Length: 331
Image 1 (tube, rainbow, N blue to C red):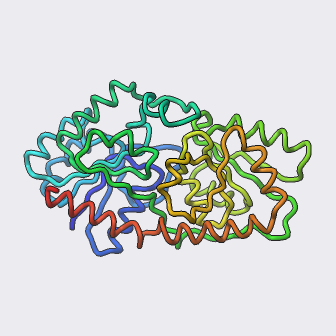
Image 2 (cartoon, rainbow, N blue to C red):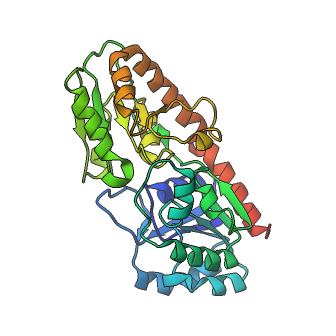
Image 3 (cartoon, one colour):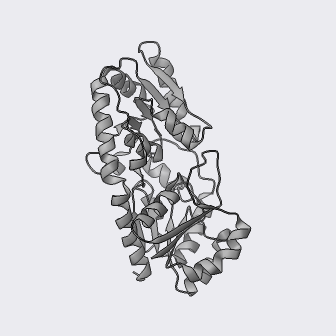
């Protein structure tokens, strides 16, 4: 197949999926108009809105499948979707979080308050009503986001985050280390619950021996080198699921701490090794992990295995191709 990803790179996922599709023998390219200090590496084409306007028609003629990301299509307000739909183009929309996460559903399901989306609930509803009129297949990463889109699309596919773990070095926590390094890397402090993490760290400093580093405003490549020295990596403790930092940290063999809601946890494979903590329990959870170096080592091994099994390209790519085939078939 000929597959085009456009227009928003989120956490390196566009590049990773493009790589997996190429390894499987398909022609795949990506076009990204979203840049940030994270600066994910790869050969995705960097573009802007003007350039995208010029390539809509050539790509529509070329591609068998167009894989859109983050609620966006080629043009502002997704005004190109009726044209692409009328021309019988197979399309999927991959939603990543704040493009569809409403205050209403979050308030009903999540015990902790998270920052609102950059759109109002009404705007999200309007966007989804319009987009799902022309795109019948949506993708989300897990069942935390699933309820936010389930009532709109004919088909909603749950596809785990993709990780090229072969490129990530492994450094398991030492069984003998009595002075572990804890790292927290908040790309969005309010969303990640950083104030609760840092309060716990400050409290624990009075009774426990460990080191702590907060990683902010650092490129993805630099951050990954820093993570390699960690024993424990604290991800997000409010949202109710885990993100790409957790996946990459597990791939490195690190202990990962994050809040995963019970209803979301029930949908993950039972061997998920993430240590669950929330604002009320983060201090106690970290205190236990600080005292148990052998448990940290074993959790690190379990994390790497989990990523190899459930986030690898060999696991994700066939599932992605099945979604494309469904979209092409009109089902």
